Length: 458
Ligand SMILES: *Cc1c(COP(=O)(O)O)cnc(C)c1O
Image 1: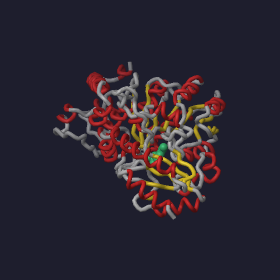
Image 2: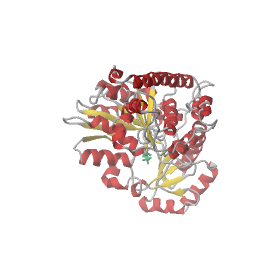
Image 3: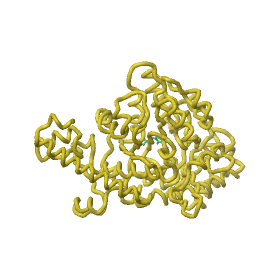
Image 4: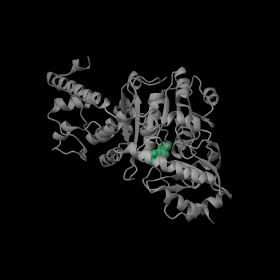
């Protein structure tokens, strides 16, 4: 087929390449039989990989910009993507490959089909690379997305896609309302996008039901699962087609690296694009549009991310438990008007969140344990000024526009992460001026609660 036009030398490399691809697939199949923690610790880098890398038990960081080829035949086969190779670090890199394979396995844990992953320079690069390929082609186009989403995503959709490119953005204001999703989707919709849970409102949506709505129209559902991480929710198991992560956040709590990822299942629906886009979206994006746009991750960041991922499950368990205690404290506090945390029984998202957010591999004793992540928000009585006062009085909890850290961090979204979208945009996203977003870290919850108690006592 594709090999016919190639010389005997190139064909020999293609043959070797096929064997290497088969070996890689066997490695994936072996790891798919392992438990979540084992995958998080090893990914695809096992004893064999170590022996090929001076025996190093930790994945090596390949900082080299490019790969040296044995000869022109190998170079030709590599650049035609006919053999496993990396060629140039914007296209691929061995250290990034280890991270991509680990993420594909973790996000695909418990999912029957194959998954593939692409890592990017940042979470926003992942949101862009996961959505832009669906906007190609002539004719009217619209996108349907939850208005309760990360500020950068809101701006990408409303400004870059909407205002600059004339794509109609149809916001779903109450993501729990299936009627609202259903009414917004039509024959010109290119994709449906939701965040679960959302930053900073902590809203949730019914992934399976919205996936079904999208599939009925032959379009994909994309889910930003940054806050849940695969340790708590794996949207592909519930019908989502592409999962997006800011690897900068809950996945990599040490805060040493910015990064993003998109993970897809095979054979996704789409109204546009070549067959390769539908067959294996993440690989298609990696080999074609991503190569041209160029937002690649640094190998250093990939190694930092891999290292943080190894303890993802136990970390999300501990942080979720602490966050529940902090949420309960805040819910009882007279100075707090409202707490947004889907783990609280009176939260509007509680029932849906309880269906989707479980600690992975916690079902050995029967029912799986519900865990709701480590982000919460609360509204301070007394308006914007009172919220600023509380934020300014914090002593242990850091004031920063960040989340997912092992250190507790708080911010006021309307003056930080969501400032650019303005008052109207914040109203649309359901973010009042007195809302403080708190990401609970690994400190003892008593100390976090004590800091909040003194900050609220003015
Ligand atoms: C931070 C964040 C992003 C963007 O990620 P960066 O790595 O900062 O570019 C996307 N989605 C969510 C939910 C986020 O919290």
